[in-house]
Image (cartoon, rainbow, N blue to C red; front, side, top):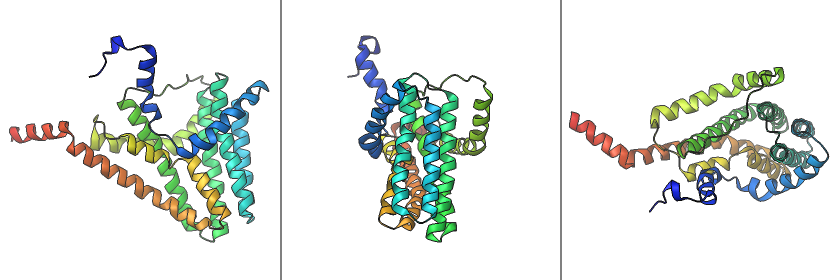
Length: 277
């Protein structure tokens, strides 16, 4: 039997509210990069390094990795990409540790990742001799990352754990970064949420399994997989893997459709519709 909210202890309530937050765990992130990034954030905080500096360092390392990859040094590029991932996760840990989470920082992180991804896939197109496949893989990755983000947000909303957004400051840099985000990601966000609203309405279509699978298609895992493929001398394999990711996302959507159709609420709604007829 459920415990009434009024009788829950603060610890129990915090654990209950945090449950959806923990649903979409990305294994490579949690096991490898999060402990490293948390450890790195402490000395950076003591040194007075700001989170945006780490974001820019992350972007710079990613750009250098793309150049190294373009020259054909696959192992060097693989190592640099893992350093890029470490820094990419460290900026968030540093922002939280120093209470400097900002809207501009979140936009900068997202836009920087997009720019680095463009460079990486250009380099992959060059070293594999398959620029069209690389372009298709870039589009597929951008789409899957958007699906991951929006499905996770919808899952959290359905479980009463809304994402806390930093307050907007109205600064010119923040507005410029927000405009860049809206240009690229806002249309994808609207399409994904529009499809969800059309097919599911307010019904809880996404479960822990779907959110977890999508989380493990995230950028940390993607760059780890790319690193492995580069070390093995098989960058084309990674491109084909990424192109296949939207197929997996589509399969999860079909699964969600079937779950909603089989839910008791849907059955009752169908029965009421038949009675009206």
